[in-house]
Image (cartoon, rainbow, N blue to C red; front, side, top):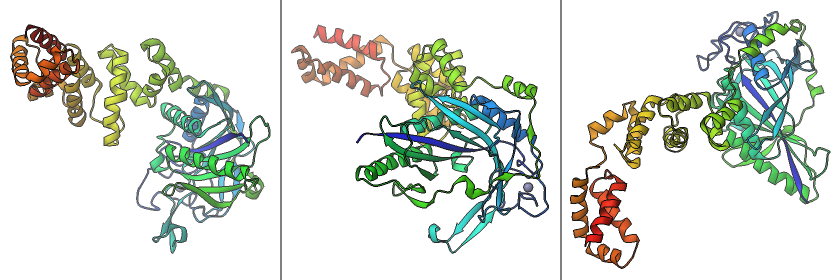
Length: 478
Ligand SMILES: [Zn+2]
């Protein structure tokens, strides 16, 4: 039986406001446990919420950046459930009248993934389970610093058809929210979190299969892996004639499996009712339009512009706009060294490698656009070879030093002096009579070997084109 995969994602993003959404406590990450709290975010009786205008502004900006319609009227509801990290025993959220609906994200394959809704809500606190076994902790500590931080929940339509598409959707979503400066989207600090709904259905069928919801997905890679696992598991259940159970499953990163956590709750279980302490949220058309007019160029538009203006292909332009900082770095470098394809190649390969190994983002590294541009100029005018440039880049990346100064200080300039190269070629030829004989009998590899020997003697600093030319001339004369 051939199955089609149906995936929908629910993403929670913390809004980058200084104060929480319904009180004036700080949202700073870290901090002494329970030092950013007040009667309201501790859920004490009688404390009343006051909506933070900045949170509404950022949520609106996010919704507009995602192409949603922002509604002039939306309302807040109480979502009732008990958990130790939720002292009021309800979360203020939005229910049947959310802030915004009907957006979309376009994937690189041209497919669009619908966004059902964007709504605002308040964050819960954080339970710190104590003991070696987190599943059977001896006791838990509660930190309410996070309690009441403003969140948006972004719910996608079930339009995603593979784990890879899910990963790309998340990458694009994150980029859009970062460009719009709505959230820092740090998964490691929990300011972006994702739950995934997944079901299978017979190909061609219109009806949805029974879904499972996956939780505890702590990276985009984890989302992709957990979904891959779940596709496999559900298809085996269905192929053997069984039924998928509707439930919430948790991803075990170390074991690479999902396992049942609890049976899925329905909306009715939460006994939603309108929040009596908050008026409906009324937004003026002019205010919404003002926020729209302040939106920056978003990643998809920027990628299309890079294709048009710099001649990059779809894939390269996608990588160059993956973060706003990378795109800014790219454009600043191209301005100084107007060979857009060359700059993109260096950023995608060598710079990317250094970023990965140092676990940094481009803006955290010491590399500057003017230094990358200077390095590429040195390669272009023949001062250094491409391989030496990689070494120079490493140093400039680590220290912020100018490539010119590194080349001077270490004597890394390429040898382009014909006389000097001729002497080296002569000594190499003399030392390798067998290779010379091989060359004479037409073995092409021998030339490569001899060039390699010249490079070895000059520590890679011989000008390769010139070395080739001189070596060929010399061998012809033998
Ligand atoms: Zn508070």
